Image (cartoon, rainbow, N blue to C red):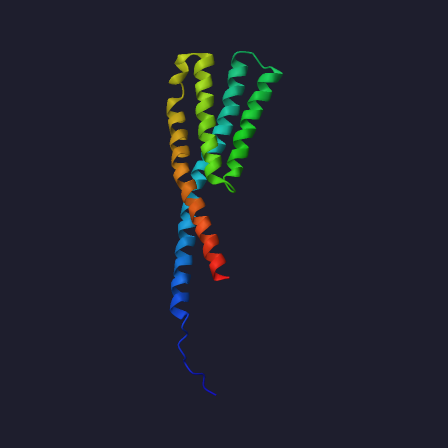
Length: 155
């Protein structure tokens, strides 16, 4: 028996939806790759905080238990935010940016106005990656939502 080539009414819709799903998947991969830069910036902040605090404590010969606890706690918060970008990208990046700016402001208030310019290039680079990370986090969350809606419609 020969099979007849009966056109499937759903075939054009299936081709379009497959194309759209593939396009959205590529767009999501691109946004998530760019989001990795923000995640890495958060991890860099954590490392710089720990190293910087240890250097300052060592140079001023002021290693104290409370100083070490604060240094490790701040580092832990940023490491946690870095890992949270996988589940809650936008919230994590926004909190990291606000926390980073707040810590910088505390340094200026506690240590003096000369801390406005200390490490300004590194701080500017970190702020740039976090600020652009907000854009990519929004895009990632939007695409994830679209993909879930699209998959729910197909089922």
